[in-house]
Length: 88
Image (cartoon, rainbow, N blue to C red; front, side):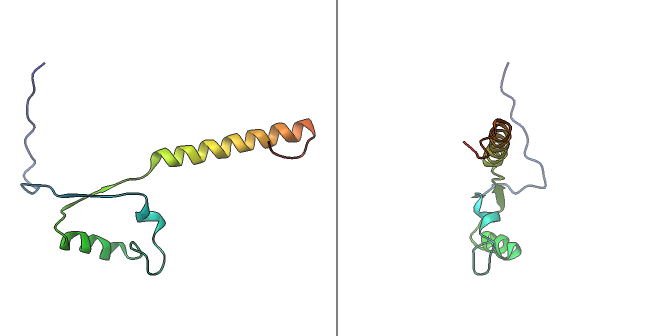
């Protein structure tokens, strides 16, 4: 199999300058925090010369949180069934 370059779509800039927003874009949204106003945060990224924002949706942590809740629920259910009344 040989490499075939993919043409850049015409609507994209010649060069992409990418900023990565980690999970803080949705946990640092309170008053006075960096992402309180997303429109302003995007405008500031443009002012800094970025034309692309890569968003980290943190799917790994979401999956971990879901798994922990599921496991905690299973442990609670097992404890309740055995009569201990608590979690392990």
